[in-house]
Length: 424
Ligand code: AMP
Ligand code: GLY
Image (tube, rainbow, N blue to C red; front, side, top):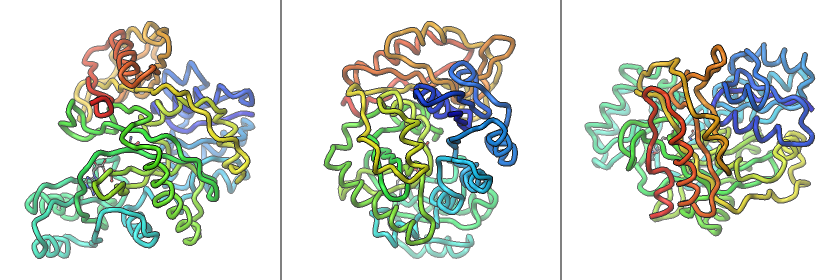
């Protein structure tokens, strides 16, 4: 069957690369893709948020399965539009994607489902939020814009002064526009973070091994937040018994509550967790694969991903054999453009991609790249995700960084400590 992956990041390169592996895959399209997906699949020049053209393309090219990578088209209703056109698509409906699209919706749902999460309050204007902050104890809080803000609408505050400033930015200055129409102020949790993702058809849940992302830009979790500078999987921070507990106390009640709310959830349910002294608590839900968590996860997956996603679309995940995983851990190191997550220059030629990719047990997933006159150049902040398997996390880390050494462009940089929290 023909398959279409929507998006242009490292996650979508990994999805296309893995789906292409299926004996059932004929053509694998990526819209719009990058220089890596142009090699492992076929790029289609349509933006990931252009719903009418995606639907048209899928109809005209006999696409039997569309997989939507990023949150924006999901929250905008791409899945509904494809389904309305009689097409098969893996991902949540617009109503179900609210779980990521609205933090207020998510927090209220977690409360109703009795899923462990930080205590919170919702505000519709700056005055009531300021009043609340002035009245309560001066404990650290996190202030969040309700809507999608490209990962920037979450402000972690050390004290009241910082919290008041955060309220001003979201509700006063309207830094995040309409995403700040409501805001959430919640208790600041302490612990290690981990990502637990599951594939679900709304009835059956296939929980994937836990991964750990590295959101801050610099080593030792210093510097500004990014989309994620690297990830590894599985993380020993989440034991098998803890993973069972997350499934039982987090994922299952969430899926049930979504069903009760008449917003059945199909797709990837991604729980961003804080591993607190009192057990794992949900920081947020995403409704898609994590980027870069997807890259090490799919590097380890041995089962036929197309088979699994296809079954999820038909609501028959219960018929699928348990997922098979490479026992070896995988580490993904993101190489970024100089200046990222701020502004950066584009168009620098990238060298050494073939040498890096030729190393054993290494795959270079492209993110912000394009091929111009036969030359691969950087076009985004996160440029490539160098991913390696190894007998241990330490060996996978070593292999990934050895591959990183081959890749060069003007201003390229990466964190040097991806996966160290697992090793120490
Ligand atoms: P989110 O987009 O909601 O996952 O938030 C982005 C990042 O903010 C998370 O990865 C955490 O590092 C941090 N964060 C969010 N909520 C909290 C919280 N309640 N306590 C501590 N840190 C948080
Ligand atoms: N890796 C974090 C995210 O995909 O949101």
